[in-house]
Amino acid sequence: MHRETPVNPPLIAVLNGPNLNMLGIREPEKYGSATLDDVEALCAETAEEFGLAIDFRQTNSEGELVTWVQECRGRAAGIIINPAGYTTTSIATMDALLAVGLPVIEVHITNIHRREEFRHHSFISKAAVGVICGLGVQGYALAMRAMADLVEQDGE
Image 1 (cartoon, helix red, strand yellow):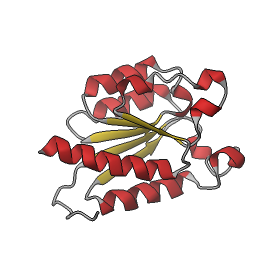
Image 2 (cartoon, helix red, strand yellow):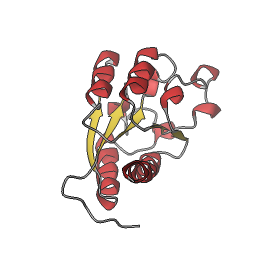
Image 3 (cartoon, one colour):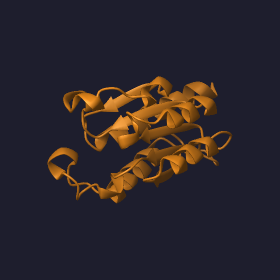
Image 4 (cartoon, helix red, strand yellow):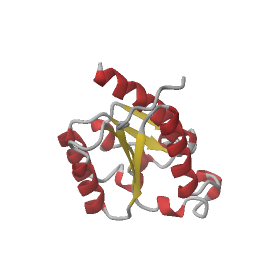
């Protein structure tokens, strides 16, 4: 579905955690050959299709990720987050996501439930409307499509 682009399109923050800057290099058998730049381009293209704007970021720092989440309050319409290694450890990120009161979609490139046992639990899921995992970088495009629907519902 193609939507009209509003004058000021809703902003979706696409936040990425540690080591995602290594996409395309790190374990391509698990994560594929797409780079983080490829993921950003995919998100931008999908956002434009749905009349959304994006703020795409990556950090290896938990504190910076928490700050970015907090900055979304009053600025963004939703958050798509791949917390990467912070999925299973960051109560601070979960708390920040819960505090901002925005729709959140959690994305993982791999299926975390088919991996090591310690990866099966996500603190971030407690704050997420939905979770997409195991569909490669296309999970980001699916998350953007779902977020477009959530933002549209919220605006009605």
